[in-house]
View 1 (cartoon, rainbow, N blue to C red):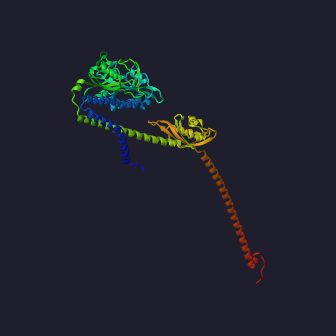
View 2: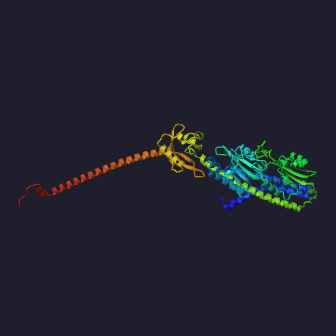
View 3: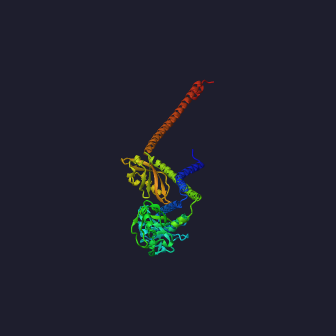
Length: 566
């Protein structure tokens, strides 16, 4: 019995709840244990409480970065596979460029994360660029487009294989060979774009507002007791104690603005471990290395100079930042003891965040599983239909040139050729039967987009025999209603035709026999009529003779015999 909509909704809700609990309960147990541990063991120890908070803060910062990178990679892959690219590659015109540019413009307005969305061709020339412009997004005119062939992020992105992603170093945007003012922190995400034939045609670049990431980190650490810093792998501040300390590698007069120059003892410990927490004379440090690149992504050292190349490539493990939370000793000593009530409030807030996140993640997982199940059912149904065509049927697809692009395995039962042997057109197996001329005409009309009735063709089998196939074709259209090929089903009707011919001959024989019998019956009818006429004449003669015998007088006068005188 099919499920009602209400039943389906209940099942979906149950699955989502179950999945959410699987995610949430371990986190709940972990967080609850942490709160209980802090309450019973560390409530009176301000240093330990502060350290625990700092650890949570650093972990949260890592999660924010990972979440942002995951979203950006999804946007990049979606925008790199738009159908409008293929139209642009076929014909570079105002209309094709405008169609792709409008897609970029729509994405910029809706996502609001990217300062620029660009497509550059193989020579590094910007073909399309959309600027966010503080919310007033616009398509950059042709005369404002620039050649970025000498910029490291173009070169490094263009060298990648399909599906790979390049992430630039976290640096400041450069326009016209100069660092843009006011400072605009930027991360560039790039991936090569290919045509349908696998030819590399250019690079898609997203200029991600680095300030958004930094602001997210700031918001997450607003209530932190200490200073939360973001460093690159060389110790330069991306987010530092003050703006004058930041982006030292981009300015000649700030080259000495590095964490290790300010905290040399702490830097030694931080560089030896990917994560940890320790205390020195300056205060308490909590740190963690962040590896934002996913497997298969690449980066490079980049360059602070506008047209200088990267000095080397960086893999996912080599590209990393450092999150460092510094709690000065004077703050630790002056900060009052944390109360359980405050800890409970933090616990509840984090719990709610985890609950909402777990529910959202679970809902997404259930939706993906449902989509995969539907897709799997559809694929299985299609496979069953196609693979079930045995002995008398086979299914095929042809392009506009008439070349087979797919043939179902059942073709070997019909004409003896396997699918791999038949990657050609029907022309290679058609006989010289006049029947095939009409078939060619129907096929030509179908490829012009005209629906045609089923028709018959005669083909040569692999063993030398012939078969009569009844073919039903339909045109395959793309999104613009242009014919890109045809799909068809061929049915072997050779045996059926032989039976029909035999029946036809038998019917003709019966018709001839019936005609002969009708002619014979007609002749008998005529003979019977003549016999009846003869019998009638004979009867009339006998009747006349009988009358004459009974009346001789009349008979004598009639024949001149004299009678007695009166």
